[in-house]
Length: 409
Ligand code: PLP
Image (cartoon, rainbow, N blue to C red; front, side):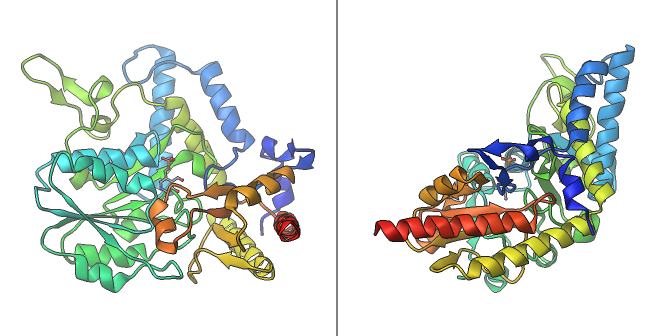
């Protein structure tokens, strides 16, 4: 069991007041708060060991390089990648998917008329990068549907794979529905047709034990800021065999071996995909965040968050006119909801007045909203530092907002 009250002391922002009320931060799917150790790593990085990495022979450059490469190994261990050069640092999930989309489509692994499969519950970051590539090659996007509860239709997925399918790209967990997808099964099905799979782990890594070798994922991507790390740093894991085949994404910096106007050659992995000055402070701060999570124990965090989810679901069920958007039996991290005809924005604004931070709107997943014929939802999303007391505050806040709107009618 985690001592949450003690753990909360690690997060300076959690003592803040908003509108004269103690902050209840339930917008963790958008970004998580940062523990002091992550903040300290950033300060220490810039205060004591700041120098551009890789190219310097001087002392500071060497220790900064060592810290960046040590961070790569921390990430490698965290997701159990086989090789450390299979870890590419990116700006986040979005950049990692854009990298794969751009490089994959420019490679000879996909041709005009071929197909890529995504799901109907993807974040825009796993839709638009593929659409952008449609101007490079004539590629068809096929979309796996989901049912009224927010569960992916795996039979439909099986039937849509053809010899033209060249990649499957699906989310581990939906940021809107909370659904946890059966990614191991999806990967097995795709692999039985020799099709590689990219998993968008933005909402997966913070709430699940991820073992990329066990999953046999070809690509797994995530963002540092959603797992208590800083913004601007994220991870692309790719199996060596795919990363070797993909052409570079951006040019410049450490990604070259030799440059001339006649012929430029590229560096080995992982540097081939890390053009420009890497975010070496961000990478070390991300490693601090992952160490923090590992020290608390991911199993303990998962148990605590599952308790919060179950508790919140039971409590919220009792609210009149409550409608959950996303009712899979396998959910993690969040609850999306509507109450009667109250607009999500209005609900969010009233909750904010009570110091409660939730997200409202389409959550960058407009196709999910279209599927339900709604404009948006209110989303409460959980992290390791949230408490049952905070859920009680949320429930009381929702009830108060609902009463105000009923009176107005
Ligand atoms: N994919 C999912 C499932 C997400 O929830 C998010 C962010 O909310 C993203 C991708 C994009 O992440 P980022 O903005 O950190 O690149």
